[in-house]
Length: 393
Image 1 (tube, one colour):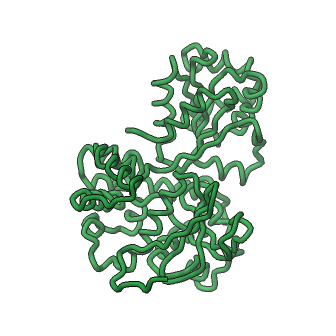
Image 2: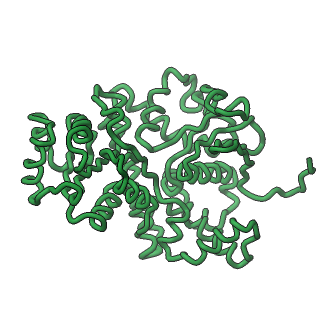
Image 3: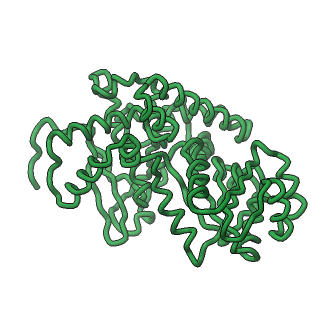
């Protein structure tokens, strides 16, 4: 399946200023697949090392993290010769080995001709919660997100429709009615399936929503397991409570996330670490309100007013246990949830455009503020068209 990350990886490979690359992202977003597919198509061979399935690797890095020491040993472990610029070295689940992360500094300084990509599902959590010696300034970093709407459509073979949408957007002309209806159907399918590559692949091959839901439930279970495995003992329950409540608050017409809705009398001091863990793991994202629409937006951010969205639409629907037909036909029973779902959809797409969304002043509709290199733009977000005409300004 086509992933846009491939374009970034190709540019990274050819860059004169290339450093070891850290690819972050939540579990199951396709980090390992994308790296290995890139290695298969752009290098003579790939030396792959997984610190979760091969704990013995940790001992090698504990002994010495000099590239001259590591390369011969890693070649032996991989069963193949590691050659400068011709072999892609991959460290997977690197958050389990602090020394491997530290070694990237020395690869950058002393052996820059070796091409290295490391991946970690909970790397943000590990670095922020443990005493990691992070190789600041010695690595390139990139975050991989679930597949966006365009990638989803391409996976389903809708290349022509994608090009028609782009053409209409560029020329500011309406999409023909038949194509618009087809695009809206695909949009609703995307809400159900989401962008997790395994789910998209299953849907593309089978069109079986039940099979997709089973996979989504498995991913959700792995997230809950991570909350127990990679979290402080006294924060496990708080993290699960906060995560469960996020989808509940998306169903409510709140202008901000409310701690008191997690539990009666809940306060920021009690749950802020739990929310930080969820954000660092890539499971959710936090969008802050700004008091004024001025650059830089960061200066006008209200740290006490924010909303939280989940990273994948399919997982959102699975967590709410919504049937596929409820979404595909937009039944009235989910009217209260449509707005939150539309907000979440937009938030999922925006990180892929390298923009950071923020929320404008509270109103009936959500106003998203985007900061671009030239200007600051805002737009109103609705889950459906207005039922009555609006007065012109």
